[in-house]
Length: 96
Image (cartoon, rainbow, N blue to C red; front, side):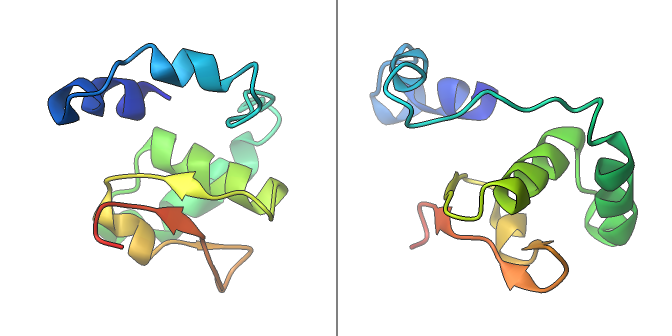
């Protein structure tokens, strides 16, 4: 949410759009990083060479929990990241 909110104005969009997505269920905020901390640690260690940050690890984990989800990102590393080991992550990204 934070990344998208920051990027929208640069493209002429309204950062409040992201908040409007929550009640419409475009995005789901039901994620507890504390419950997923071990899996997040495993992800960050696995992608240490690419320096996966905490936010990216959370998005990869949320993608694994919600397999029908699609990650909206401008981070090109998501072309490399995998969920559940080898599954590519469906993306909404500027390069597509």
